[in-house]
Image (cartoon, rainbow, N blue to C red; front, side):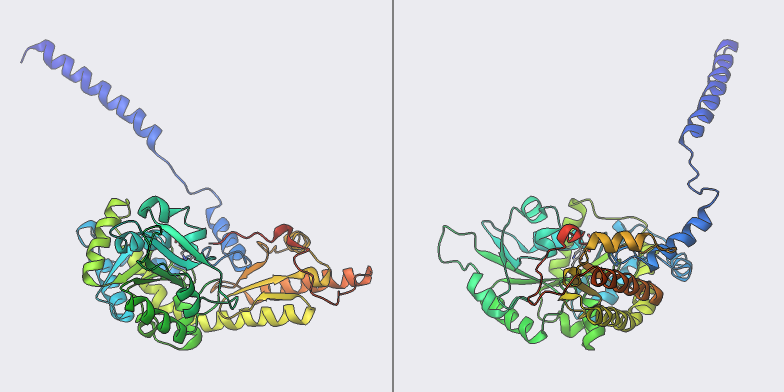
Length: 409
Ligand SMILES: Cc1ncc(COP(=O)(O)O)c(C=O)c1O
């Protein structure tokens, strides 16, 4: 090697190292602020006083500790803790197989895409269904499916007659025939009677169609009715269940169904970009949530019912009762608006976070948050009364709707 070559190599090496140090300097990041510990304590406090959703629940220290013990591995090649979670989910839902997916939306959309094979086709669901209203038009985008939305005739849940009246059978080529009927349980916190689910299932299957369940909060139905998860899932071909809402895990849902269905769904999960790598920590968090957070749901429902009773006692209209963890209300009957409640609640020494007509109680909601919310509404109602507001004879329908738009999460 010539002297010159060796020298130029050394110069190049030196230059590379110093420019690498500069690049590393640009790349590095410390996300921990000087106050991050206090910030997280404050965040946990805020969550205990937030009524907008149960998706805002956060992992506890115990959940995190358990998660760090999970197996290591790349789940695209089957990671052991994730496999254990999937096997467990298949077992408790009474299905052949399960698939861990990043979100409830991914789970529903992959399920529908897997069921829908040969267009033209359509999906039938409740007009309030998450798959229809809050999944960014995913059924059209991912599956090219038309959607038949149905307003439940009883104002509560879809019935067999609603399905019979709206299903499109293969009789007329002008229509996109229904291939999947999709139910949601709970829907806005309300429970579909299981007899109705069974009747719909028998009808749908008698016509060779599929029945999917968005069971993001099916845990709440099991907790409230004491029905096993398997019994609740039996009538369905596929079910999506979420860990990151009422159960308080950080991320993830499971889709369950037959072996063949999940095999195909696994391929769609990859295609949709939802196959994840080191998922052990997520699977362990979900397992922790199943073991330690699911048992908390009955007391969550009790707290929601206590909130509802307090609202009724003040004279507030209840639009949808606390069957599980959600209440929809309208304070117009006591002359108060959602904006007034939210503004007053935000001025408390320990503020409350509110979103409008929907109140969600979750495993991290504090009892004092419920008491404080009731005090705010009671106080406002008394002020209105003192200022001359008289409760109208007939219910005031939506005069306080300015914040009656809620983010469904
Ligand atoms: C009933 C229901 N299904 C599906 C989803 C979607 O879940 P994700 O937000 O994880 O996509 C949600 C979200 O809250 C939901 O409430």
